[in-house]
Length: 366
Image (cartoon, rainbow, N blue to C red):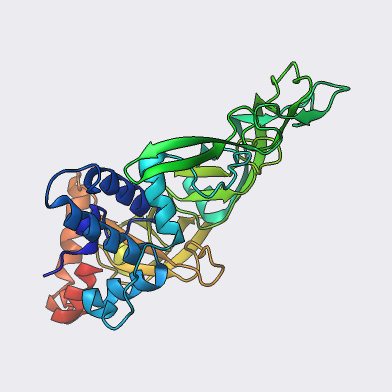
């Protein structure tokens, strides 16, 4: 019985393309029969190659994830590894590029920064300035890497090709190994005179500031991606992205549950008994609710549309107000007589349940 492809490569089922490729390279180094004398290595190598062939292709991976090995039956078996797989196998042994593809200038790195919001700001949205250290474009040469008055010249190491070649010997015999030129990094040209401030890289450390628009409804721990505001790339390469990590401070008045806001309001037992108008805080200011006569502890009132807006722009949560009934402490004889007089006017009908058994269960879970 065939083993699970993910188990063969040692990756989780939600592994990304890069993780799968890395796992295959590692297995190839360990198992190829030309470097591993173990009699069982060849079979394991073929097993790993088959697993990679399946999982590296989005179409076959989708079939395998849904139906397992049965989903791949009837598909023509590959007689040899495809272009991508062969390149990956070559990289696994030599770390080079057998087909001579250029590396080119590297894109800039992504940068992360945290921004702290109040509970209300997370519900209503806010524009917040952020400041962060980043590798930016050199102002002296404007990213060109050349000193003022000079330009670019052909790289002498690779003769302008952006690549250097050498013969490498491996388990399959001799290979012509082609790699990116280490001096010009694949550009084929170098600064005639490097910029004195960035030493020819076109980039210098700086401190950037940016006004970040935080959308209404964002939750604690979510990130905002701002393309192109990360570290500057090498000459001609795009900049990385800025990721703003949102941290929402707790608020003793509110708790968030999904798109709903939950708050508790304390009222005197007398107001709960006869009904009253009560002012409650909301994320948009104060609002008023009308207590029903006979309001019980933990009764819930709903303010429609007073919760968080959905980030998609469709829909909005409610605010659920839970009533805490406060019972006074009677400390005088006069107060005690008043309570006793009130008790004489009440009977079992005043204490009857307004809800049935199942309704009370629903209320308890709610």
